[in-house]
Amino acid sequence: MKSIVILFSGEGSNLENIIRSVDPKLVKVSKAITNNPAAPGINRARALGVEVEIIDHTLFPSRESFDAELVKSVRKSNADLVVLAGFMRILTPVFTDAIRNAVNIHPSLLPMFKGADAARRSFESSMKVAGVTVHWVSAELDSGEIIDQRCFYKGNLDFDGFMKRIKEIEHEMYPRVIMDLLTKREI
Ligand code: GRF
Image (cartoon, rainbow, N blue to C red):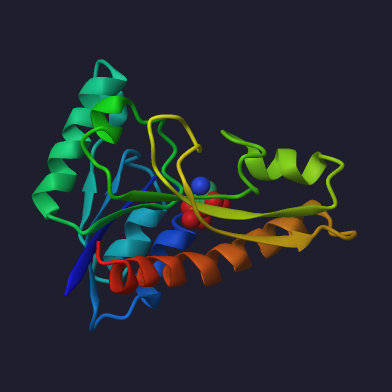
């Protein structure tokens, strides 16, 4: 049996979708960790029986001291894979040097539109296609090796339609990539 830990900061639609979609015979969601005590995702995870740990970043004097606590918590869980799902903190080398088995999902075709507000910037650009990327977490923000990527034509979608398409793709893609990594790549 493999296990994952999920890190999130907000709504938690990917968090909930992953919990619901991974095959429980093969993968256990050991716990979820959030930096945001007000994250709606907290109730979504708990309602599905997943323990949520809150590590409030505002209580730490630096990014590094927050990351050190995060590393401690992740290590305690012994997870095979750490899954970032809307985790809105920039990670320092304290985390990225210690935790090598972490993946992230980003709402653009990386390396285009790294960083915050990526979906909005991708929507507003003159590019005809947009998409979603799953990548390994590395020291540089949204820059680790790409694991999988999907794109779509923007056509004449308005922003709501565009975001709906992004979420649909994320929700199909992320659990599949996680299962593949855990069952086929021997991590
Ligand atoms: C997703 O769009 C993901 O790509 C980005 O943050 C968003 C999180 O949404 N990293 P949710 O909290 O999973 O609904």
